[in-house]
Image (tube, rainbow, N blue to C red; front, side):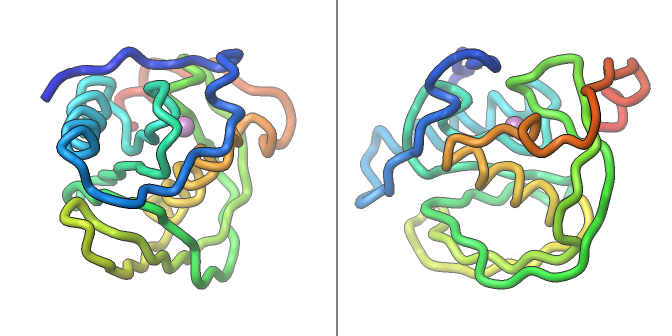
Length: 159
Ligand code: NI
């Protein structure tokens, strides 16, 4: 496992649609490990493969209850809404206010290529929406209400 180089806003790879993963190759397993390493190193709660320049439909999320690996994820149910600050490792030092569903149920394949479903509320729901958007070439900045703000040191600590 290793750290990967992050891609930042303005890099065209972040605006492309990632490809469906058809099989779990050793290379893909290595990528998953690297995504987790890189996410923790960057103190993020989620990271998607396009953010390290790989156009595969894979992302990882850890909002404090252990890591989840999502391969080919899809949202199968969502409800409610939450409006709050959101940041992205590809848009460092900034945050913006985004409205997302407050409840999300997703289906995906895990790191062993087994199907699973998971439900999340609040930060976990927000993180799923945010990371899955990356796989379709979207950044939260497109959805932010009003201008982005500079993230304070305290905000970064919380994340
Ligand atoms: Ni992001």
